[in-house]
Amino acid sequence: MQGEEHGQLGPWMTMALVVGCIIGAGIFMLPVALAPLGPNAAAGWLISGVGALCIAFALSRLVTSDGAGLQAYVERIFGPTTGFVVGWSFYVSQCSTNAALAIAAASAVAWLNPGVADPWSIALMAVTFVAFLTGVNALGVRAMGRLAVLTTLIKVLPLFAAIALVGIGYGEGRQFEVMAPVPLSFNTIAIAAALALYALLGFENATVPVGKVRDPTRLIPRSILIGTAFVAMLYLLSSTSVVMLLSPEATARSTAPFADALATRWGEPAAIFAALGMAISAFGCLNAGIMVTGELGYAMAVRHDLPKAMARTRGINTPYVSQIVGAALCITLVMLNSSKTTAGLFTFIILLSTVSVLVVYVIGSLAAWTKTPRPFPRSVIVVGIIFAVFAFYGSGLEANLWGIVLLAGGLAIRMVMHRINAASRSIPAPAERPA
Image (tube, rainbow, N blue to C red; front, side, top):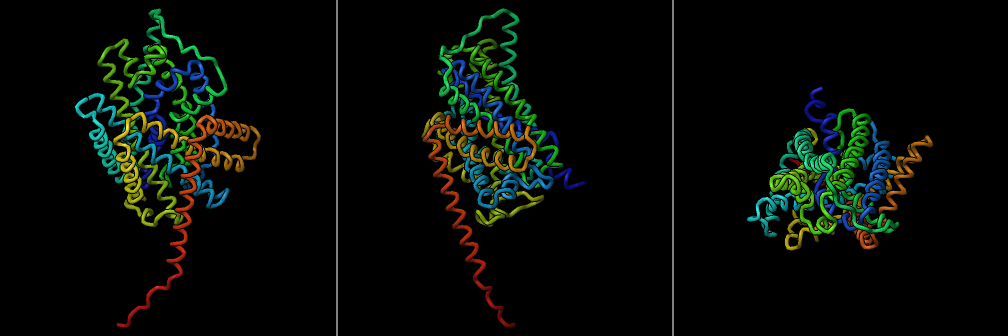
């Protein structure tokens, strides 16, 4: 059918959406934070990979044939207020992540061209990226999907290159660096798992498009599970490879660990290649992120949880107003943080994004558990819930308090919007003047 062919995502675009949303900027900088943790980092990767797969499995169980979106799936089981909590938490997480991605893409370009490395030039580039990709998304979901496929194919190359470099070294009998001598401990593994989880966020985005995935009950679960498993294994191997190529001290000091790791064997051209890969990775992830914020804002607007103007669409159900609002929020965050260091921004974003999306994971998993009668799928879902609670603990008290404040703010906005909507319905229409 014409609408399915030209207005919906097929298998490759849906898979690219999952993989492209997971592989952003986080993995390229994460070795800096994980290297001082020694073997706890590898344990954290394994725990996060298994936990993410269990949560991905749970969310995939919610998908229905109408492809109505994650908020609708939860709403049908727990009611509209809980559905809003999921939609709002998801929205906060994605808006803040989009700002970090825009900054990351611009920072990678600045690494390649030091002439534009000052904070205001980076901010201007980031704003330009957001504006351009909002225009791409306004053309429709398949325009976004085509760009997602292209950037996903490019962004995995530096990760595979790091793995290949270790493989070549083993073949040549090369001696590798050893991990930092840090003993395994529950608290350190919890921190490592929370950090690793941030790099794995994004698989849930495939559940967001409202009616825009062809054959959703087949494509969405398959893409979520295969895409998450692929990226989790790729991350474990590539991140460990970087630590083996650089000493823990050098990794912790690095501003571009993948670039520095590749440069140990292949020199400056390899470092440029890795930095370019990071720029394209963040750029591609931002492309999908703008789509996600547009769809989430639209889903809340049609329920009168946000201003009804955000429910306006063009073409084949493209929520262009909601996309513009999401882009404006992203640009605001970029400009507010333009005077801060990139590392400071990323620290704030990790806290904000991880805790917010954990709310989505827990409620979504509970909804899937309610919907699933068989014991084995339920046991997998329970493992995912336990992991999410473990990640809450690893994120720390400050991050969790931020999450509570932001959630309370969202519920206050919803209450105001519903009162405004009720008041507008109670006002009688003006009498028609006689001709």
